[in-house]
Length: 184
Image (cartoon, rainbow, N blue to C red; front, side, top):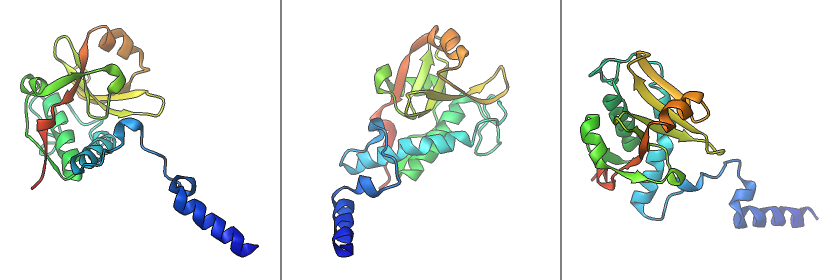
């Protein structure tokens, strides 16, 4: 009887690893395709939340670079998050671009197809990065607030999101594929 039970458990574990795993399945938007770049992109997107969290609360400074001065503006914040996430994924991010030059290197995406690293952009081209989307589709944003003089985070259930961000929304944008390339 013990032998039968052991064999049954082994069969179930080999036939259905999800039944014997403590890991939760990645949200569909983050599941990699079978290509190496697809896997790297999934790692890139999955790395963004922990990297972004490191920057919350650091002081705002126009032209500040968090990797050298522990201060930041929006352009350097996004550059730092994208660069560090790309490195974790074995990718190279194309380099620092001010917001005026970064936005033309993005493409508009539907609000139902958002992923970590996408941008919410206002009509005045001010942007925040979506750094995490939880299982309930609640979005978490990060940006450098000149008004508050620090890097802040807020979520899509915050009244300011509806009253300000949605009211002034230009759209949601994602980096063009050419902005991330495999490291040779």
